[in-house]
Length: 180
Image 1 (cartoon, one colour):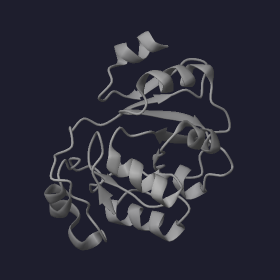
Image 2 (cartoon, rainbow, N blue to C red; image 1 turned 180 degrees about the vertical axis):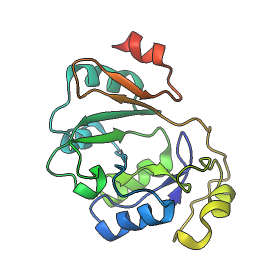
Image 3 (cartoon, rainbow, N blue to C red; image 1 turned 90 degrees about the vertical axis):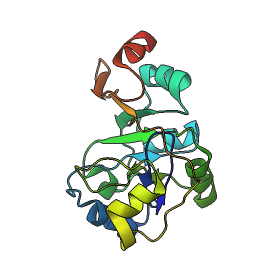
Image 4 (cartoon, rainbow, N blue to C red; image 1 turned 90 degrees about the horizontal axis):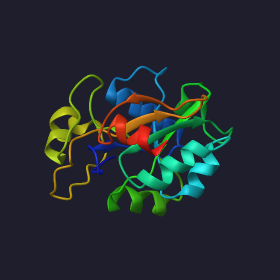
């Protein structure tokens, strides 16, 4: 399923539905050794997915979430290996968009939140762009008749002593450094 977010169109499935997650890798032509980010509806879901939530992560969460910030945390055993590609971390974000939040709340579990594109191609901002790239490879495309803003989320890894911005996106490196 493809859906609009506060950044770009997302491609998602329930994190616990292995076959659906495998299909995301296939549709995106994404290497299976590349972890997938998760979207959650609230802080308690972050706590369930992370082994620990460091103090610096709490600062970032309180300042920027919901919003265009993805935080990389030590993974909890509750997260399937297919999501983390067998790694020791999990990337999570609370989107500031009603559609993915409603989906997450409705299914009651985190949602894979990767961009709805073929790996290496531009991230789509409209349902039509998703259809152009992925066509009938997805079961459903939710169209809210509004283009997504178009800037990917900023990714910050807080698993080490010092937070590391691994991708600068909608939130600048300077804003992250000031918050930390």
